[in-house]
Image (cartoon, rainbow, N blue to C red; front, side, top):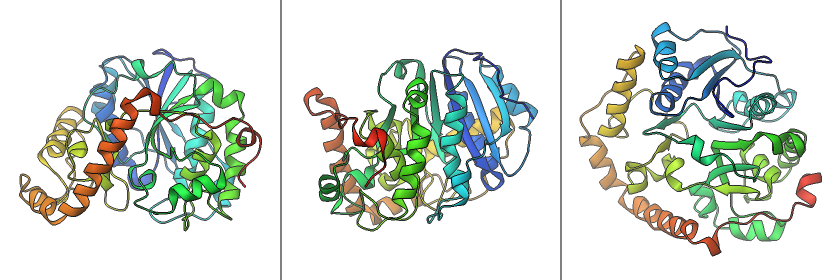
Length: 339
């Protein structure tokens, strides 16, 4: 195993981090490779492993490092509260470790890009152009939550509880490392995590998760990235999904194994390219050259139309400076959890 301890940045101020357990090891390798093979500027990649140890294949390491990137594989840091909270549907205890990963890397890197292992990048993220912001984080809005599709009372709940309605998805984030440490974000997150286990400030009914706690911790102090940086699977078959820079396969069904009704030609081509360049086995499953995907889009046309409209509203809003999200005052949320 390659240790990450006390080694200074090799490739500038940005680290790209993933954390996974053994069940999602191979899928996370595909996720990491999708970013590494396309990212032009050298960055340092970290693969944190929870509850297992497995070195990456030599061809995989060669493919990443031949592009000038660093690659470290190490045990995931511990986070004791992860053992004390209930785990929600479609989540594992590994999810709660991302804050521990951020805490560790923030001591060595100015910015930490964290991506879930169920994401695929279809182009260069150009992280070097994203960093430099003063907010606590940069992320994308959660498409099903911020639109009110998951809970029509979402906006009302936010107003009633005094929290920002600019609710981001935590599967793709760039964290301001210095501000994370300076504001003791990990401590505040922990308090918010336990507060959320009793009541959610955003949702009328909410499953245990760390995403709400992260939103509470940043208190709206988040730079919103364009939708294409994190198009969640709720937007399957939309134009945004078809052209996404990052697809995020939220929910139970991931991109592995391949399923013909969910896998389009673009996804299949990317998986084949990664497999060819890294020697990772092509994911099991079936692909019928987009026929089932097309038929599934017809079946889902009403849902697709709703998301097309909502995404259009979000994109227009983000493109208008006067209506861009603004952070809440950093009073109560900086010092104590909700409520």
